[in-house]
Length: 266
Ligand code: SAM
Image (tube, rainbow, N blue to C red; front, side):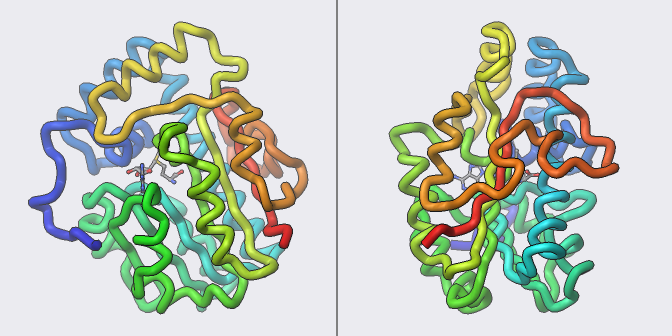
């Protein structure tokens, strides 16, 4: 269901979308989100948190450019899209082809509220939904009546699976989307990782997200790699985001994340 009313916006609890917006230097956050980020900054270091967010955002940009310019993808389902900021998926995709279609999906209703004014045009949709119930996205007419799943669609899960617990079956969620994807479709995933991360830093991430609307789950590289089951990873594979087809976008290098892109292998 789309919930585009401001009355649904959780004001007294930090949300991942607004915390991420604050870390990227955006304006769409409240005191409760700034307080949560202040805890993160104290535990981990402000520069490290902001650099992690920016490294991830740069990865998203290079992925969309690669998919649209080099793979010919014209349809994107951006799940856990976050609040609109600079270089959003539809803006990059439209550079390759102004007719590219993008559906943004986020659990946080603030995304639809802020996004409607900024993003909504004939080739862009914004849907409020929970990816932990994939059918609510895939069976939504605003999604499947707008994107043609008979043709390649890139599904983006960028910095969102670390908000899905093992009990919520992350691999099953990816599989539900993959089953609808036509040959030639892609998936992109980035994820906070414990690999190379000190124990105090891990605790700092958990403390920062304690009390947020969605729980945080850091994963090992091997567990993140499993999410690509049914896809062939494109070069350079699952790597640190700054190493994924690096460009001249000045990406920070934090080693807090892994990221990769896979092509449907069926
Ligand atoms: N994908 C964007 C990017 O990488 O720049 C935003 C990433 S932000 C860290 C994570 C986003 O995932 C937040 O906007 C949050 O609301 C959203 N999210 C978390 N759990 C979700 C769920 N179960 N379904 C849909 N969106 C979710």
